[in-house]
Image (cartoon, rainbow, N blue to C red; front, side, top):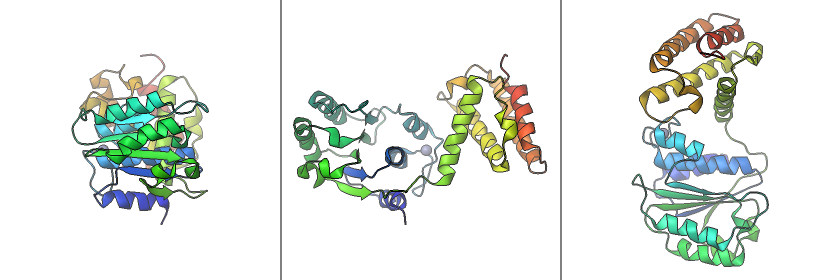
Length: 266
Ligand SMILES: [Zn+2]
């Protein structure tokens, strides 16, 4: 069982420790793991087993714009200043905007100096109900023992990575955004070598269109299209998905679909 799986299983158990320490060498993995945990705790559509990734909380957590998921990430090698920690701790005391829980993710938390760490310790001693701190670090040994002892630690091993399916769907979303940003014509869609890529690209597109039609959050790149156009393109994407199953020219088909529905100029 990977650390990520152990962590997910732990969260599913229900009672979540107020301070989880995620340590390990891969910063991307730890950060995405923290976001996934936040989704697992706040998803409104998934079940206990898994977050959906598509509901409003899930998407806003992924985009780092959820008001009850505070993220502290200092640029470069800056130390985390005491004022920054105090402000974060203060924010965590304020009631959640959307009810339910409040989560703080502190990246590279070993960069707290002693004063910051001591200020933080006070909050950690009495975190309050439904408050969760996810501390990420590549150097757990650099943390104050008083902080370490208040955390439940999960350490990722070197070489551990996100599940392939997750990496793929993120890559497809990035590909979609890249295409919508400059639709004319990267042409790489034609060169897709795996049918799976075409499928997951179309499914990503459908999920994004569904999201924009259902509610206010969306890819800004899609918001310039009318609802009717999005509806048409959604139906065409579903239909294309069906055709892809029996056609070898999937790259070409997706490319011509994109040129028709999401061209450079409307
Ligand atoms: Zn969800």
